[in-house]
Amino acid sequence: ASAASARPVRAASQNFATVCASLPATAPTAFPDKFDSHLKMMAAHVQEMTALSAPNRTFYSALTAAQQSTLDNLHAHGPKH
Image (cartoon, rainbow, N blue to C red; front, side):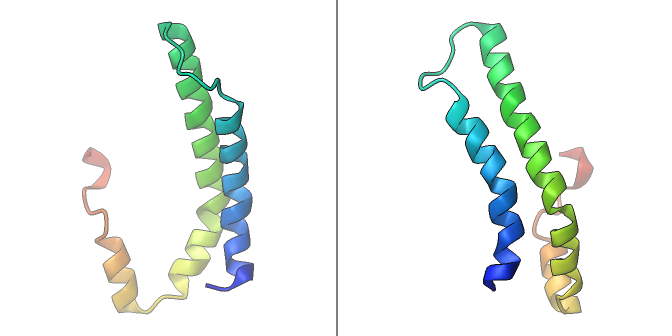
């Protein structure tokens, strides 16, 4: 992959890394605190995935039909997982 194609991934991952670094060094023990930490990580993950949606479509469209088929079947469990 080229450096230009890696930029969106690096940029999107930076926020997730920042959120992870902001969490306490030791895992919280109280349920509300555990819940809040999990929520922060999931929100950062959603932001990361949203930022990568367009680059992923660009990448996918550049693949051959055989490559697309391989990628399509990589996680074939679907929405019922």
